[in-house]
Length: 184
Image 1 (cartoon, one colour):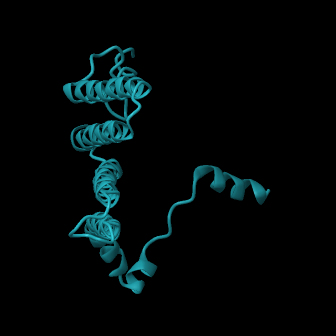
Image 2 (image 1 turned 180 degrees about the vertical axis):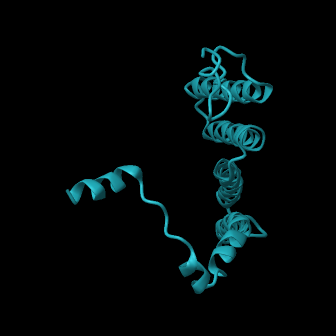
């Protein structure tokens, strides 16, 4: 009798006290390393007075976090949402770098080749950033459609008659008891 209750009908027992798998360990170690980097950079930011240095430190943090998210999404969880967030973070970082470069160039004083100044470069930078963000959004949307498309098409191609001929879903046990008990 004692051996009958040991087996679980839902699967193997939970790994209580077991060591983590390699993937779990790598995911945890990667996340802890990224958090440590963020803390170190955050403390370092308190002592930086140059705006450009702050910008590059923030960019470094964004890149590190995006890479860690990509690694976690690929190795540990296989979550498309986490990968999309990582790609979005990298896209934002690229957009910030382009904006900073355009702003730096636009702030230059007029010279012989540009007697009216360099201000128009900001518009070019804005258009480039818009194109990059649209490309990222379109590629994420296309990936989602390519994954979900076959499922939706299979669902839509069912014939109405075939759906009507299917048996109705079984009622839950407690609902069946209410129906039986209500007639007495």
